[in-house]
Image (tube, rainbow, N blue to C red; front, side):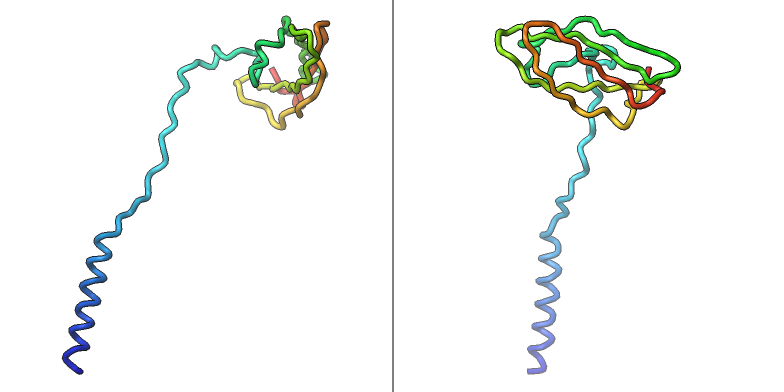
Length: 129
């Protein structure tokens, strides 16, 4: 019995070492973020999401700036289909260095039809440019 115990212990040690050699660390490093090929200046100031660009048109925005009040913007919108469109919109404002101002204004809801209507948003921060 004494001779079998050391042999069994040696087999367990050898099997443990062999098993440990079979386990590989499968941890992968995080993927590298690619640089956006579209320059910051190429992004439009007005964006239609969810394929609404086929159903909504906008006019030139009117920017209302004052030293006493936060920046506000008014944009004319209308639907180009004969159906009323229930849409959500929001305005994002940036500071003089192009950083997004926080907090961001909430989404608002409106119904668009063929008649032009104006949507308006105001910055929550006087640093908006």
